[in-house]
Length: 330
Image 1 (tube, rainbow, N blue to C red):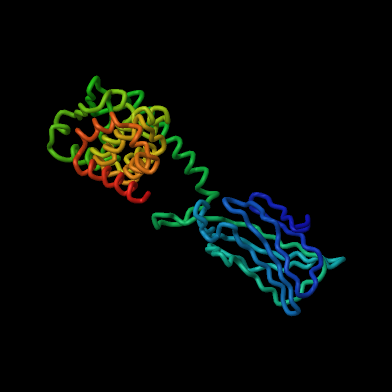
Image 2: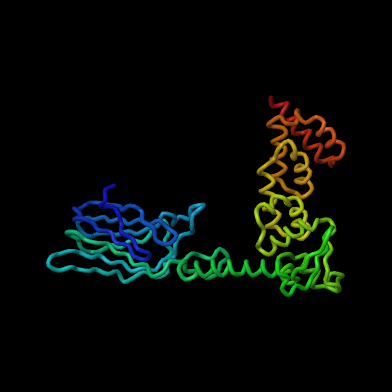
């Protein structure tokens, strides 16, 4: 590609200067960035018309990219015909979902000489995954980010500064105050506790005697959006138990994924039992693969003997079946 394929881009404006285009010629620009997407322009001329095309690189909803843009824009063709300049303006595109084929403008005249293709974006929106109204990336992105950050920092301050707390959480070795409304919003189990005439509602206390105060702090920090990475890693198993007990699927899945990442000979049997107890198929599969496929089961005879005497019988059977399958496949 030569420099002639480069598009000059501002936050909402793009201009592509095209030299004289011979008949039956196709040209495509280099990518240019506006909003969340990389864009391309192309132009094609035959003896009857000139076709201009605009499309976004991720307009086919690439797996890790933004969804197809919903665009509003004005397109102009600025044609240099000394001593005058002719301008051809498209009527305008409003809230158009730009699918892979993009936007095509066929001009029923043959453009001669140098010209400029100009795109002025009026708005760019993305679809709401939950089915609501599309949101403008310019009107909502910065506001939403600012709002989210402010809300999370305010929630964390409510917890840490004990602002208008109305419930006491009794852990195994201490207590901490919290807000029943926030707990109820994050967990259907808490919501049920505080909605019915149970002990927790009457006395404004929740007993979590199987969790240390440190783990309880980590649990509440997650609920209030303020959990630090080191605190999460240090309390994963306790957080997994709490997530299962209080029906918090997002926290349970976060623990599940994290426990998969650092399986070793020192923890594999404990994690295998954890996976079996809390119905974590990926973690169970990862542990069995570590033991059987990598033959670590033969390096852990003492640990394995203790495991076989205490583990659930169905789980022991799964381990034996895995080993037998590995033997028969040799």
